[in-house]
Every structure is written in C-alpha cells, then in structure tokens.
Image (cartoon, rainbow, N blue to C red; front, side, top):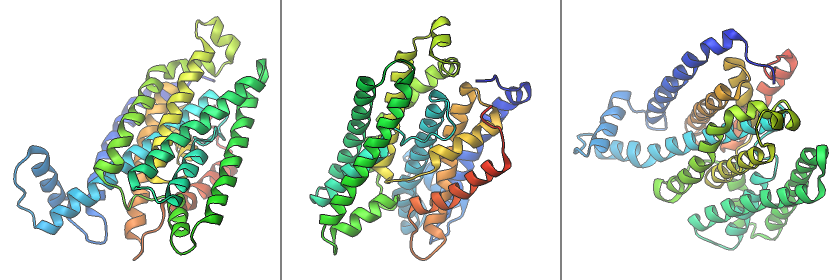
Length: 346
C-alpha cells in the first residue's frame, strides 16, 4: 500500500477528533428525533439524571422515551455501525481489494440462517440472537477450513474468497428453504422482516449487552495490529521479511472481523453496505494508512448508522427497515465513487 500523503497524515488527528465530537453530537440529536420530538436540553437532563442516579424531574413518558426506548437503539446503532465499518476496513486492507465487505467469508449469511432457523422453531428472542451469532461464526469457520485445505501457496487467498462465496450461497439457499417451509401467516413475515434489518425491538439487556463483549474482543486486536495490516498490504513475502508473521496476523484479523460482523448481524439483522462504503469515505478523509483509516471507519460507521436509524424511525408513519435505507444510500454513493474514479485506495 502506498503511504498516506503528508497532507492527509497531518490532518488525520483533527479529523478523528472531529469525528468523535460529531458522533457525540449526533447521538444527542438522535435522542431528540422521532415520532415525539424532544428538545436536546430535556434529553441531556434525562441522561444526566440517570447516569448520576438522581431523580429525574422530566415528565414520565418523556423520561421513558429517552432512557428505555431511544437509548438502547442509539447504543446499538453505534456498536453495529462501528463494528461493520471497522470489519470492512480491515478486510479491504487484508485482501488488498476495495470491493470487499464484512460478509465476504459468510458471516452475514450464517447469521441470517441462524436467525431464520430460530424463528422457524419459535425460539425466544435471545435464543434467536444467539443462534444467529453462533452460525455466523460457524459459517466463517467452514469457509476458513475449506480454504485452508484446498488453497495452496499464492492461491490460498483466492481460494478463501471463493470458499466464502460458496458458503454464503449455501446459507442463502438454506434461508430460502426455511422461508419456503415457514408458516406464511406468522413465521414467514418474522423471518422476512428480520432479514431486512432493524433496531426497533432492541433492548439493553437482551440485545445490546450480549454483543458488547464480542465486538470489543474483535475490535481491540484489530486496533493493536493495524500497523501490521499496512505491512501485509505489500504481500506475504515482503511482510515476512520485515518480521511480520502473515498467517498469524491474518488469523487475528479474520477472527476479529468475524466476531464483530456476527455480533452486529445477530442484533440488527442484515444491514448491508456499511462495511463496503464507509471505509472508502474514511480513506478519502485520512488516507489509506490502516493506523488512521480503521478508527476513522469505526467512527464514521457509527455516525452513518445513527443517522440512517433516525431516518428509519422518523421519515414515515411506519418504520422503514435499516437494510433498505442503507442500500438506498450506499449503492448510489458507491456508484458515484466509481463514476468519479476517485483513487481513495491508493
């Protein structure tokens, strides 16, 4: 990978700091946005009262709206958006391909299959989320096992990618099978709406807390190893000559990205385009150096999904699934990047 230009390197720190401030401001405004509009002052008062343990002086329904309804959604949007964008940035650097997304190795397809099976068998909400998370991990494990057994030498990366495509296609076929045999009046709509993605039913205890640890366990190693990702971009032989063990780093990156992707999909459903488009925007702002692009991608992904979720729950009288909105925003933007021929990758 070509080193970042001096101008980008110099502005990377203020850009990341600005993104942190923007994320905090977007979160506060997200509390105020919705069917019931609330002032930022009221939101800050409710948050301060609950964080400090003081009795809230806010009208009861408004307090409930801020703390029990909107707060879980905002926290979930930050976690999911940041996780998907960081996983996408790590994969794009690892595979040296700007067209790569977090579902490359089958994590999203496996998670979708796990959720579809759980809904079909009438499992509880937490059990469905756990099933989605576990099968997301299993799908990537199968991909990696097949790629390791079949791939040899310089073709190992290509074989791994092709194995991921095969596993994703198989999961998609099995999801279609579960929809085919599902009760059309009850189970089929549940499966369909889950696959479209959304945060309308999230709660702190059942949905948010279970994904915090997997996301942190996946994100921390990526942040620690992000300078080694730069070295891997030169190729395995060059990385080995510089003292980096390519297979070890690749293993950590794949495990970390898989944990984040599976956790995000298990909580929010199939939310696409975040991990594909956001890393491009991050590289346009701070350059291709993974030391800066990875944290910038995580922050941008959190901001993006927060804004999209605000639109989903306030634009129309009925809530629009997140997967639809991210595709409506992400696909044209990605086409715009291609049409303009921006070389944000290099």
